[in-house]
Amino acid sequence: MLIPDDYALFKSKGISAEQISEQLNSFQRGFPFLEIIHAAEPGKGIKIFDENELEASLQNWNEFLKTDAGILKFVPASGAASRMFKDLFEFLDGDVDTPVKPAEIKFFEEISHFAFYEELNDTCLKNNGQSISELIAAKKFKVVVANLLLNTGLNYGALPKGLLRFHTYADAKRTPMQEHLVEGALYANNNGQVNLHFTVSTEHRALFEKHLDSCLQTYEKQYKCRFNVSFSEQKPSTDTVAADAANQPFRENGQIIFRPGGHGALIENLNDLEADIIFIKNIDNVVPDSLKTPTITYKKALAGYLTGLRKTIFGYLQELENASVSAERLKTIEAFCRNELNNTRPGIDKLSQDELREYLFGKLNRPVRVCGMVKNTGEPGGGPFITVNQDGTTSPQILESSQIDLANPTEKAKMMQSTHFNPVDLVCSVKNYQGKKFDLLKYVDKNTGFISSKSKNGKELKALELPGLWNGAMSNWNTVFVEVPIETFNPVKTVNDLLRPQHQ
Image 1: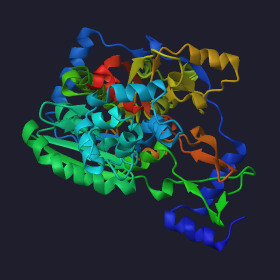
Image 2: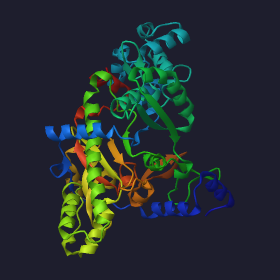
Image 3: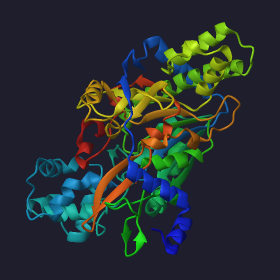
Image 4: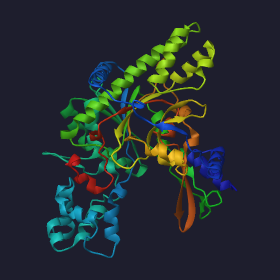
């Protein structure tokens, strides 16, 4: 089914014909659901810090910050803001000139509370000779929306979330990118150095770099540190082939269509970075300074708990290098795997001493992540679960609902029992006990991808998403779940979310 031009396209993207074949086979066979043991919950897969543990974890992190270890804050920031403005785009394109839907009405009623209000007002005056209030009084609502969303105005409908004005301060407005700089200074400042990495889309990279240049000196002066900021883009080699209804390559004008592989592609970007400890948090989950205390406290606590775990794991690995390690010590290490990492293996008591030592070494010698989890205040769905791995062992995994067989009443019931969800609040250890960086690509479960159905020009199109960054891409890491306060999770999914008290 392939022609010579196809191979030239594959080569330009850095994708092999074997990868294409594997992806097309995935469309044919689909992806298996994961078997759930139970939803993780407090005391059964989710740790809740008591006061002493919280203080000890904070102390661990403060001590770690005195070392010369590499600390990095990793922020996926390629997401466009267009979905934030879905209601406003529909209003702009609709037949009705006056707001009718609740979201539209709320936007105009409280428009002066947005951090971008003054800039939008100036744009309306420049483009139309009238202020926002004058345009609203004249019922020219669509003119206001056009000035906000379109490239004749602020172009917010085409910009990435990271560059929108989110928060208002007495002397400035801040974008999510700027809030992440401040966060980094407050919990990842290592001897005056703060390292951040943003993954951005190719078309927006220059805008991010320009925005950074405009504010970097101000924040370095304010927080008395040096920011080392880098950027990367999703690699073309992580794009996935689209398929038609017959699971053959989807073509347009004779050329195979590729699509971005989803956030799971970013494991490649993460793997390219040099660091010991990496924080991961989404671009839109930020709050103003007045509400940062819980976020800063728990980021430090998660990191401190991770460094404590890591220290213990490294010590055990050094012991396990010795073939003569005692049966008593093996028993202690196995209990740590079971109780602290929630890793279990059926029939482990039947292993010989050598087999047990080899098993424990293999389980411990891998990347580690501590994942903050918040209480579920809405409908249960994806989040923290204890699942069965391909080798028969069980371990904690972050699942999306698409990975769960919802047609199976038993599996659906397990999902509905979930008490927490994943806010994307991770701290990762990516070097081994000898100080060498893990190859993170070796710890991806390729059987955890996802297929979605879409249409293009009236034809059915199947899209293939790679294993998600915090789902299957980290499937074979050691994972620990820790409850964090709901106050640490304040995403902005719609523009009106910026009107919530957490963003004012």
